[in-house]
Length: 248
Ligand code: NAD
Image (tube, rainbow, N blue to C red; front, side, top):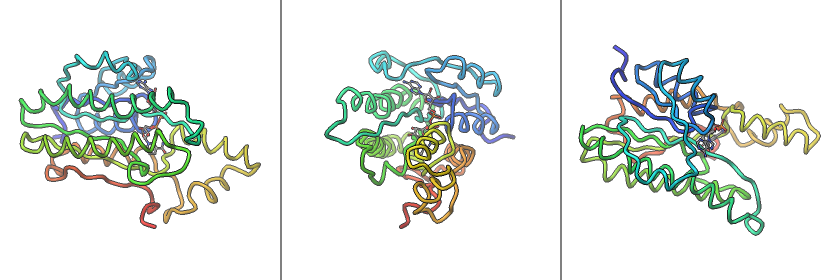
């Protein structure tokens, strides 16, 4: 029997990239998956593909999440955006937007999901953080701050949820082959006047032990394992998947 049969999962930012890979992997393990995304058409198409359902939601609208009640067993906080700017030029409104989407919305979704999880004595919270949840890079101030905050939130949920059968963990990918990263590679190739494979070798993967991008499906598999019965004693943890980048 598939391991997640009968479980309900919700994946934010589920219409694209890592989120879409999580949706497919969780559904393949038997879960009913709700694809939550601002991209209405993308979420609906993927929900139809996997036999799940879709929820069109702008997670920047945080006040609307304050009264939410979620009856899901598995919550994957994945939606995220990136902005690159030195701190002294970082627009305050952009900083706040990133924190709203990548820290405040996950808090509100955890808050909305815990009562149901506590009632049934089971829950899995999985936060898609980043190597930038554990280490900083210049010019990614809001992103690094939001991901570090997410790590803290995840650990508090682990401590509070443990006695109720709820685990909470982070996954911390390095560069993953998603539309977001493919755009970054193309932009850097143009900016430096070098081919894309050279951008990968000399810029993005220079410090990795394994010289390739992470595939979204690899993150989906780790997230599905964290949702499974095999990870029952894993909580408050952060799992890097970065080809050895952060080992250096
Ligand atoms: P992506 O751009 O491919 O997908 C992000 C999804 O989030 C999209 O479907 C988008 O519509 C949705 N989204 C954006 N704003 C939203 C909003 N306001 N409300 C609802 N949905 C919204 O991105 P990705 O590369 O798959 O990244 C997913 C997560 O993984 C992010 O949290 C990112 O920080 C993290 N991550 C990515 C990488 C990488 O290399 N791609 C590495 C480490 C961590």
